Image (cartoon, rainbow, N blue to C red):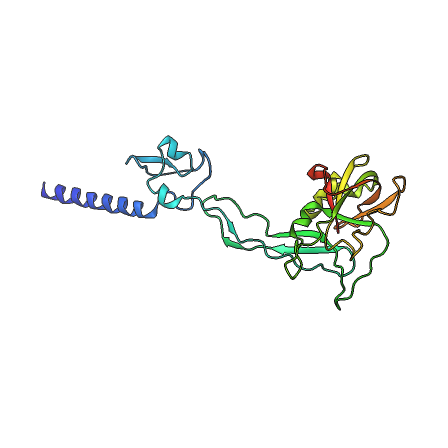
Length: 264
């Protein structure tokens, strides 16, 4: 009888030790899932102190079948990124080119948190001075255009804090465009898919694209009548180009956002 008691006590101690080690190992460690996922399971102690199948997905909170350590192991942490940097200068002076801005990861996602977004953006641009600070001297050629989103990064005041001329808008009717405008799928060229033949588009002429003391932009057709066919070129994709005719000049663009662009 004494031997049986000692043997039983040893088994109890072994079972307790195994149970304690099992608890320490953690049921949800490395197994957390987003949403309701019935495949996100393991075998361990549940929160209701029942040992068996338990879950590590977000839905287990509602169904009350989470593993005991769900709330310590599974809070989802989304990716955190920094603010965008300032835009870089154009890659090439005095010609259509590309500028870049970046951001970096401040916290990696954990436990099925939201993944990180893109860390780089590109936009078409053109510098108006060369590396020596001389004006590039654009006096002829097609109108270079880009997405209206580009205008958000342009200065609204000069270096002395004085407001710049807000510019104006020109409404055109698109006569033609090359098929390359619709096949580009790079992020900074997606706006070109809205350039459609027969549609009216609005193009803003703002600093610094406005010529000094002339209140005009290259290729805006101010000296042309409404029957003159003018040429345009999309910045960011040299194969996207076409023609249009000027309809009118206005103070503000009245076209829908997807048909509003800006002189570069």
